[in-house]
Amino acid sequence: MLPIPVPSHFRIIAHRGASAYAPENTAAAFALAVEMGATEFETDVQLATDGTVVLCHDSDLARYGHGPRLVEEMSGEELLALDMGSWFSPHLFADGRMLTLDELLAAHGDRVTYHLELKGSHPDLPRKMWEIVQRHGLAQSCIVTSFSLDALRAMRTLVPEARLGWLVKGIDAEACAKAKELELFQLCPQATEITPEQMALGRTVVPEIRAWGVAGSSQQVVKLIHRVVDLGCDGMTINWPDWVAHQPGSPVA
Image (cartoon, rainbow, N blue to C red; front, side, top):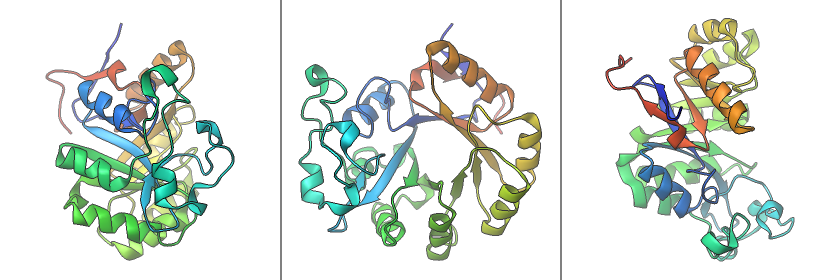
């Protein structure tokens, strides 16, 4: 019964690339997402000690087989030398390297919309990240997200016109007040938590509501996809971008 049809305006966002099939945030994962028809990527940006903006979700490298070293305490040279593929599959992806944001944008240009999640706590990350975006002329192709309100406030001060999205568990009156204060573009609730009431509340303050956390067994993932679409969300991040497809002839928002 796959792919599941979604409205033409719905954002199918390849979560760290096609990360169910290839090691997350690697060139292989993003290239595969494109093969699957994805035109939107979500990725995680962190700042190395030498100012290199790298793509890595976890704050340390333990899950990738490199011990508890912290990304923010290593240089770009050290990080870019790491094998980031063998933890996923040593046969298929050995020696897949960590990417920089610069490499990702150079590879895909304006063919993709980028959802850039600010990770870590380095105060220079928003500025360094946006300098790279501007150098590639891709400001209009980027949405900056974070769980951290402080990071989003820093982005709003730095780039008043930036499209910002706040990753939240659910949408309540307090979240809406802060979204209005920061003039957010998106509220991004967890797929398992969002309700029709929360959708209605969020619609009063932001142009878009997109979900995260579409995960679990295959049956759970399918159920969550239907839940997110049926509630009227504007998109979702998903590790299986080929499990959904835009419905021909569906109305454009």
